[in-house]
Image (cartoon, rainbow, N blue to C red; front, side, top):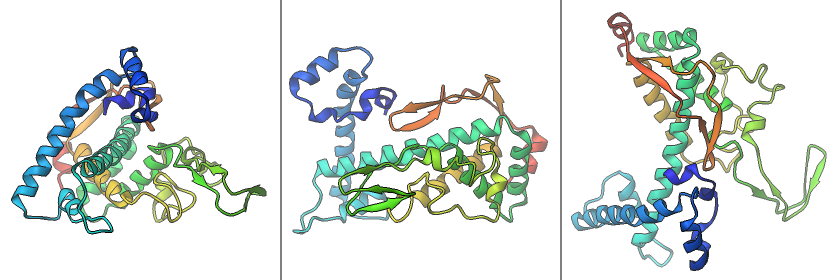
Length: 279
């Protein structure tokens, strides 16, 4: 995962020639030397887990069991390599993006005690999670983990906004631009969860998971995970900023995260606040 700190994470490194791999491995600042050294260890651990489950032979409702049940058109199961690839895709794509949203949530709440208090009050009351849901929607609006979604290739001529696009051209929807459009979201730079109270995000105007029918299949799981983590954090600790300046967004592979983490000091809630926030 640390390779995502380097620009090389965006390159198809396994398609390089052996000579180019040897050359790039020796170059500093690429992260490739550590990545290629650690990858066989990760593969071995995953292969061991797959072998253990195959030996037991009992399937449950976990991810590995679901993957074991998938077959090719000829009925053959996924190979160990295919299982590894699917597991790593789900692990990286399904955790790095979610953690990014949680980090941005902490960044916003560390500068907004009023809204942090409102969220704690709702959790303490225990009858609704309307504000918590609005918080997640607003964080994903301001700080979509993937500012530019995957490109779409035009297959039939289409006119969008008065511009005609021909087959073969690539269109890249930008969550960064659309989610921060002042015509749709007044004062888009401000953290205002209230804008989503009683309002469902638009399918084509709020696209942290992509838009339309080709959106992320894990969107509901991601929102649920963010809610669970935020609920645990805000009812357990207070956020004290180590740096008064807002965190700068920086890329980590395809995902945008707060620079340095963000740097936040977590302090246990006072007994009075913790008691009120118990759920």
